[in-house]
Length: 150
Image 1 (cartoon, rainbow, N blue to C red):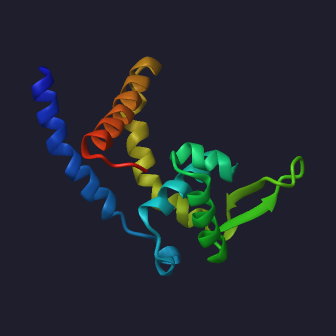
Image 2: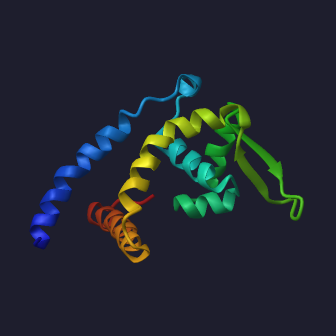
């Protein structure tokens, strides 16, 4: 497959992928919370990592710690997240999904995660790395081309 053909195929598929992601139904238990894609990304990190500090979440989301602090504060006030002090370093806050909402968040993200598992499972570790690296590089390039920043 040529580079141009690959670019063509990807340009056609990306809007469909984004449209499907936007149409993912929010579980009834979470509908009243006015969740945004930024919330979804943070919840996905916590679902896979179980718990994290604000600094770790900021690094994973590639945004400023202050941005994550605002989102964590918002989700904590809504009862979706729980915060606690790190017993080793009381200046650090550890965040996790509240048990009462964990199954709803898992259900919301399960279809997408399972689809990625089915697609990536037959690939070698190296091939999976190439897929992820290509998507991350595309994100960087598209942001640079449009002058966007996080």
